Image (tube, rainbow, N blue to C red; front, side, top):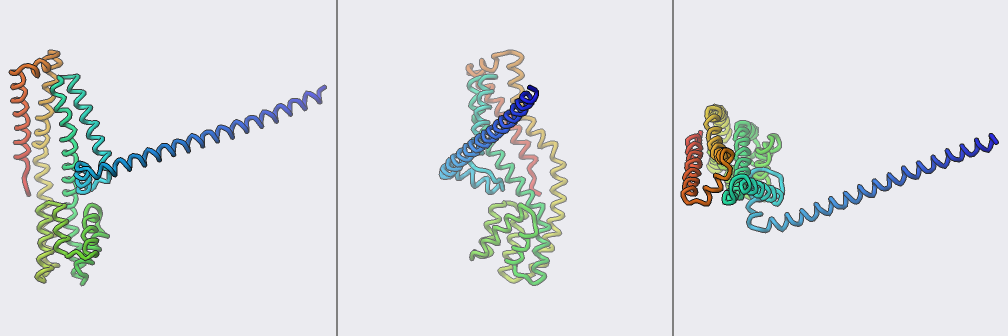
Length: 306
């Protein structure tokens, strides 16, 4: 009797272990199937988005956004940025519609367009400023390379290898253009168009003039490097001095929008009533014009070309 009980217990334990093993194998297979299905779904979604982005690039808006992204040095798909701008516009319009007045939702839709433009302009400006900060080092590298007897094309390729982005990317474009038969003047002019700045224009003009007339490129580049180093310090001091004024300009716009929300919170429905009344509409337009005008005046006064 004891032997039969012992054998039964052992058999039950073996069957339990077999069942647990089968259950674990089944769970693992199920997880693999779910992961494979998720990967397949993600891959299908990615391919569909890539096709949609390819079609979007053929449109006028898509080509414009793609060009601006390239100038800003942002590696993003134009369709993704466009969808983000649309989402921001819809959310801003909904907030203004529900919190203030339906008429003001138009400004929410405009916020998406101007927000996208401001983002791209800010990105391009930051890339340009980063390139300008690299220009003293760029001029020194070119001067040392040409002083060592290298050609200007080889010096540009060497600088592209040694410098960090964005100078690396721009010089690589110039080196590739020269490699494929473009003349130096056209390649440098194209870089100057991508980077509209007085410092870049001076560097490009110096290199073109020296290459065309056979002047002392080494001496010119070293003089430019010293001048650019001084200008970099001056630009930094000016930006630090004007930082408070620039912040004041953005505060003016925030105050204009905040006053509308505050007015509507103190007296609910007042902004909606103003949008349907001719006198209120005139008051809103005049107020908006004053705030925008103040912002533009501050921006104009703080925009100094050093």
